Image (cartoon, rainbow, N blue to C red):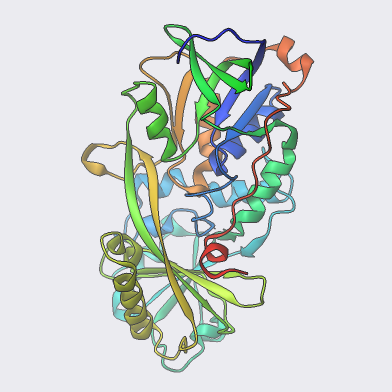
Length: 407
């Protein structure tokens, strides 16, 4: 943060750093509310944690596998309806054009494993959020005579995440820029206020935002360290997901209930350009896989699928893994956060740090951030969008299976 005399001084209400689902959703909310907001992304829109998501917009039933409602399950209960309104163009963000992969999710296991939850799943507490599926209504995957368990349908959506990112970016296309931190530096305008200097050859543009919001996921940590900010702190929750590219004809979206409160296995299906599909595996398998090699996780996935679905033939499938670090605000005893998080820092009064903690809570994160903001500056709004024309526009990140298997 060496002192530099800018060639031009620019202003905006809000500068968002990080172009994943959190930053893009917030940008849409802010511009709809009249803020002059800009977003800066280092690599590609949706890269890292966002495109690694399984796309589930869930109502929290997966957090009730102990047989009781939890803080996490209730904080997230309204999210499917919120997202449905946005997908219809009737919510606080316009998501028309984003693709829905499935309008429901399943919960399944053996009869004995689900018996301990059957009373809870049929109770008033879950009414309208869970429905038992009769034999004749089972998806094709579970029509096989070897399946003898129970099946419930959850009112959870599954979205094609790349299409969501594209719609959010297209809504605000003129406000999104790529930032090259070898040519951009933080500048202290005073001991408690940050600006950003952009260097282009011999010229420097200084952008002075009313507020800076960090939505860069795990990238927030490096920025906070560079700025010598110690609070809030971040924690990582590592996973190693498994990807299976195959031509098995049935798509499926579901959680398998095991002995733990985390789903034993979560499966989501994602289409590929060559008419094949990828089964993307999460749940306890992915959590335990964080400490294993790729070959060990793949071997564990093959054993699980053979045990749970012995009739499924994946002999011609291609297998790969994806390590993912979920970034969260630091919690006591490494607990899982119940809701999205946003807070000013302990050093700069115009710096807000935000983590949605999960994809489905992106609307909640925008609410948390906007509650910390002053009203938009009418002078800046009247001037429209600040133009930084020498900066390029970031591309959309490819899906993990495109990277792993090609098109």
